Every structure is written in C-alpha cells, then in structure tokens.
Image (cartoon, rainbow, N blue to C red; front, side, top):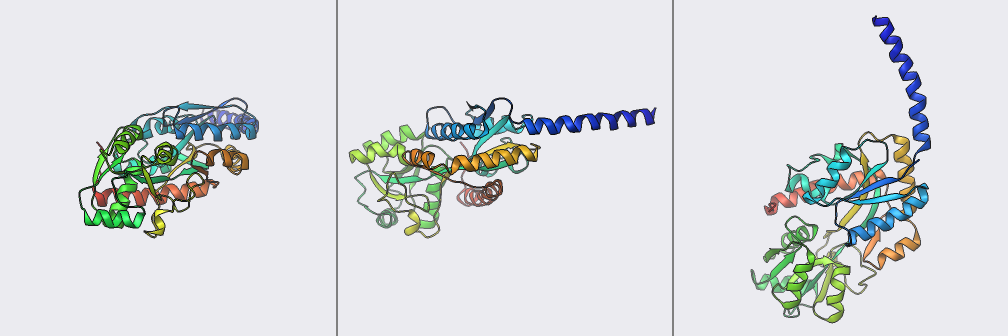
Length: 323
C-alpha cells in the first residue's frame, strides 16, 4: 500500500510539474486585477490607473484596477495577501504598509514583508507646505523661526492621524524644534477649506490639491517635503535645504501574494520597469505632481524595510496613536 501511494505521488508530481511550467509560460492568459487601497477619483487612483494602463500594454493583457479603501489600506493588502499566488491579483501598495505595523499593529497583514512579495516601484508624491497669508513667513526658515517664537499658536492641519502628511508634520516638529497644534481632519479637502479661511494656519498637502489655492493667493507655498523640486511647483525648494535630511514622501509600488512563481514576478518586474520609464507617462504624471520612480523588486523591499524602521521610530518617539 505504501509503495502504491508513493508511486501515485511521484506520477502526480511528474504530471503536475509540466502543467505548472506551462501555466507560468502562458502567463498572463487572462485579465489581471490590481487592487488599490484608496477611493476612486483621487490622485492615488489617477496615478494607479495610468501605470496600470501602460503596464497592460506591456503584458498584453487588461489590468483592472479594483479600489478597496478601508482600514488604512489594510483591507486591500489583506485581500491580496490571501489571494491565490498566480500573478492575477496584485496590490498597489503604499507607504501605509510601512506605517501600520507601528501605528496600528492589530491591522492585517501584520507583517507585509512576509505576507507580500515586492514587484517594483511605481511612483512618489511629495507634499507642499503651504500657509495662510496671516502667517508672516515667506520661507521655510522663516516659518520655523516664527513657530519657535510663537509656540502653540499655529494650528497645523492634516488629512488624518497617521497619514503621511501628518507624519511629515511630526518630522518637522522633531527636526525643526517647533511646537504647533496638530488638527487632524477626515481627508485633505475639509482641511484645505479651513486653511483658506484661516481657521488653521498651515498644512502639508499634495501639490495638485493645493495648486488652486496657491494660484488664487489664498495660501502661500514654503517648501516641498521630498528631496527634489516638483515640476508642478518649480520655484518651491525642498525642506531639506533648510533641514538637511528631511524627506517625507508618499509612495506606491506593486506587490504580489507571497509564493507567486519567480517567472511571473520577473515578467511583472520587467513590464513595470518599462511602464515607469515611459517618457510620455512621466510627463503626464508630472503635471499631477507625481514623479515616476523606477525601481526593482529589491529596491522596493529595501524601501519598505527602511521606512518600517524610520516611520516606526518616529511614531514611537512622538507618541502618535491611531484615532
């Protein structure tokens, strides 16, 4: 009996191995789902769809973007982590994968580094620090000096506790040695309304979202949160020119469920590299304040590991707690 079962297992493996190899060779033979943890219509959705469209041309299959907001993007990440690892369900993961383990450790997947496997980088999006005209500062250095001279007098908005623009504020507090009042909102739009009217005096905001207020003169730009200037706001310097080493950007990259075949991952990585180095797509997204960020699977793995440590350290040092 034991011998019979062993022979059956050997025969099954012999039959399954060529079938699995053929399945990988044929990939992709049907549409791919790219799950995004943000609601449709926003900047992340626009950027995700633009990259998906270019990647689909490279792979020769449609890519359907499935928006699954909720749980600080844990809903989307958990869905993909539990999906069949065949390359047909992918995640457009974000900075939240690095933030959640420290900010909300009960959210799943608790360890994105093992539940998901990186495919490659997508893009980065920096924030602009803009202020109400009642704030006398016209540069980042002047803002820091003003905040130091007036501790607790500036109400500084964000799109919510633990959002990247909130953590950019905490980094500014730490590196700039300032004390301001954090006023969290449920999204950037209501915060911008209050910034326009002067109910709050400052906030970090996605450049495209801030642009109408900046053009109208309702707010004044002081600095960019990333290490480089934005094509959308070429005259606004990085905060790093005032506070060396300052860098707080939102990013997204493609992940697959752990266990996805290496051949599928390699094809995905190569296709994504072509998409994120496309000059036309780069120009198109630059108009939205988004910078394509070509990078390998290893680059994305290192970024997630490094930011899990750095954001976790900042969250603990500043005592940031989820609402």
